[in-house]
Length: 303
Image (tube, rainbow, N blue to C red):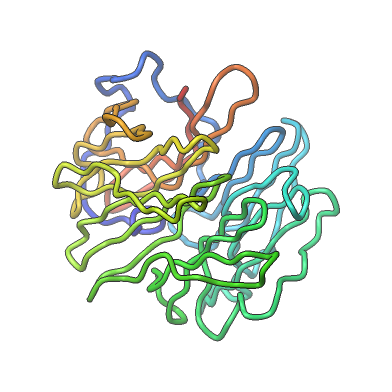
């Protein structure tokens, strides 16, 4: 989705005091003079992107145990966080997209060993001459997108299985549109398909049944989903053509969709991640203050 890196509309910047559909309002996790964007969470870990305000020169900041923190990627590269998989097939691993160049980004998938603090080797064929981006690792599977070099969005959503060394296509972009690989957890994958007019829809795919379901969408745009191991999908319901217009943070798991929070106009939501460390689910998300000088931070809300 376009909302995570570039301003897409001019809007009035308002404080985050909207009408709440949820008992607890969102709060800041990290929101500084820099731009904090993209977030991945797991028990004991938080990771998010940090860039000088107004640029897309992101580096990934990893926090472990709530105290220690370190950087992934050099100051001359771009690193965009994906997801964190704890205790999976490869151990404790963070997926991310990496470009060695800031001036002409060309992204490949990387897997970061959170214990050894080093990149893991990837099987041949995952990274190609095209852009591979938005990777999400869960157990035996790696979800990611592939598109032409130096473009912002993917044309195909791919699912790779390590044990079989096999890649399948879950979705292809419609004419003039794009797709985004979003998140994987257990038996579930979620991704977004956008038409040329930016009417976007979120889909949930179940590995065990090979079934794909479209998330409810009342003729608006749904985007930036994350999914939990029980199949619960958190996603954004917003405008297809304006940043921060009647934006809602939503929850769905097969029944009626429910709004967790209704944001004031001028606020939008980017990439999300959910974690439950014993006190109930908490959704972390990129909070966007829309406008010509858009700003980004990482916020959180009880799920």
